[in-house]
Amino acid sequence: MPGQPYMLDPAVEAMPRERLRRVQDARLRAVVQRCYQNMGMYREKFDQLGLKPDDVRSVEDLPRLPFTTKEDLRSRYPLKGLLAVPREEVQRYHMTTGTTGKPTISPLTRDDVFRAEEALARCGAAAGVGPGDLAQLMFGYGLFAGSVICHPAWERMLGAAVIPAGAALPSATQLDIMQEFRPTVLAATPSFLLHIAEVAREQGVPIAELGVQKIVTGAEPSSEETRVKIAQAFNAPIYSDIYGMCELGPHFCVECPHHQGLHINEESFLAEIIDPDTGQQLPPGQKGMLVLTCLMKQAMPLLRYQTKDITVLEDSPCSCGRSHLRVRRIMGRTDDMVKVKGVNIFPSQVEAVIRGVEEVKDSEFQMLVDRSQAAVDSLTVKVEAAQPGPELAAKLKAAFSRAFLGSNLKVELVPVGSLPRFSHKAKRLVDTRKL
Image (tube, rainbow, N blue to C red; front, side, top):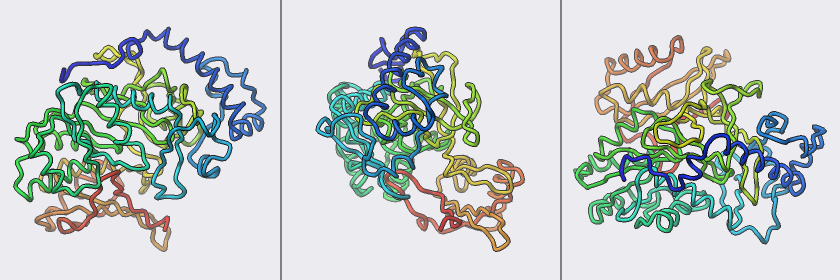
């Protein structure tokens, strides 16, 4: 099965576009009615716009609907006016960690839990995970929806065996498990896999010889250079990338082995790309913010939710046979984007430059944004280096100058091990302007 365009449910994943559109239209009408009738937040938004549920008849009417933001959800913490079902129908609650404010709550009914597991089973199936596989899950177990959903999905729906390692186990213990149990599948964030590879080198553990056959990543953006680096370290291909958000369901995309983008689960979600400044829809092929509408979520369906993720929608046919639209890998987030001298810079772009410089291609990095008394913004990129020196600093600065013309980034080389490591989502941007 490895490398093949395997589908968990071909009837849905390869559904003809005309039939899929009819399904979407019917489900959109139904969810809009439920949102207006049962969720105080949407009733207020609709009434402010003078909009009635019957005004929305098809996908073409999406621009008439109001946007939903994370701030909308946080202002109603925990769930004031947000539940579309009686509270006793909620089977589970997930939530974000709330590092930048109040956590975002994601209530799930029994049906929501099943669909969330099915979405993660699709991701595993696309990677060829199935009977005979042993998967070491290193996504976090906890309030957020990671391994808690992936674990039963891969066991029950795919027939794989699972080691619930989680992200909290020390790296040395993770390596012990790999050596003793020889998992065929690793699932973790890209930054955590890089950290495991770094620890393995320090301890002399030959991770490339441990028999890993498939790698599944997720929970944070990564550059192509980082994916190649991970694949080389473990001597195994990255077959699938998991993309989702706690508040949306939480997983809504699957990457097929052809790596032509991430297929949206379009029977359950409607995707738009908008200009983040104007809110206007953009056609396929243009870069903008991803906006998603839940079609099937029962407990807390969201309409036109602004993800803040920057990507491109692709509508060309995919070689795998799936009919659902794709998004390119996430380029960054609007709230992680730094503008320096008119140049927009994302952490993923900085990472790609670093991975291309031989002396620091395996190094951790951090971006520090500051503002001078003259109100001039500057960006300093700290990069760990085993052999720092002015020549290496100049080489990095030249690479950044080529990638970001006119940005004039500063480079600071720091000792190896001095920057933080991450087991969940890597946070490499420190913006002192917001402190």
